[in-house]
Length: 327
Image (cartoon, rainbow, N blue to C red; front, side):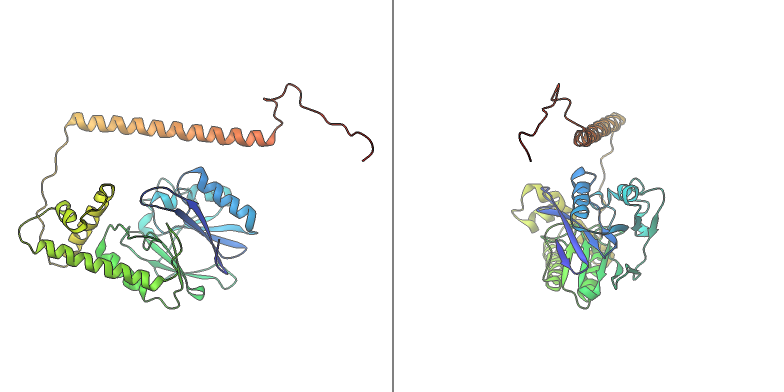
C-alpha cells in the first residue's frame, strides 16, 4: 500500500490480542530501498515481503532498519542480510539485546539526530525515543511528513512502557515535529491525525497519573496490582498483567521525581527442585520449537520442489496431448 511518494506499507494480518488487525513492515525510497522492521520469525512475514517486492517493486533492499529489538520487529534481520545482502541498522542500546538475530557482518549502529540519505531526495532523520524499550527509534521523513514509530505510537490503543519517565520526553519531542502528516506504526492502521494522536497519548498518561495519585492519596501502602484494579475498573482479565505493568511504570516515574517512596517487598525464593523443573520445561519447549521450525522448513522445501518438478507422485504416466486437425 502506498503511503506517500517514497513510502510503501506491507501489512501482515495479525490476530494477537496486543496486535489486532496487522503488523507492518515499511519500504522507503527508490532503486536502493530501506526496510523498516522485519516482522516475526514466521514464513508469512518473509513471503509477504518477498511477494510485495516481486509484484510491485523494481528495487533492491540496501538497508534493513528496525524500530527496536522486540522479536516481532527484528526476527528476520539475518534473513534480509542473507537474501538481499542488506546492511542492518540498529541503535547501540539494542546490539546486545539483538545478539541472536543479528548477522555476523553488515551491522551498523545509528545515532540520535543522524540523517540517512537514501538518494533521490529521500532523507530520514533518526530519533532515539526510549520508553517502550531502551533502544526504541523513530524515523522521520520530514519532506513527506511521514513518521515511523514502531511501538512508540500505535495505530490503536495505548502503549506498554519500560520507562514512562523517558517515554513522556519522547512523546513531547514527537508532538513538536514540523510538517507531520501521517504516522506509520508497527501495529494497526496508519494514523492520519498524528499530532492529535500523540497529544492524546500525553493527555492519557497525565490523566492516568492523576488517577493513580488519587488512589495513593487515600492513604496507606498499596500494591500496583490493587491500584490497577481500582483504576482500570472492569478491564478484561486478559489485559490485567499489562495494565498492572503500566501502573508500575507510573509508580517508577513518580519515584524518580521524588514524589513516592517504595517498600520493595519480598520475592519468593524458588527451591532447587522448582528451578530444575523450570529448566527442564524450558529445554523441552526449545526442542519442540526447533522441531516445529524443522518441519516448517521441510514443508517449505517440499512445496518448492513440487513447483519445480513434474507431479510424478500422482502419475505413473502423465497424460499426453496431440492436436487433432490443423492449428
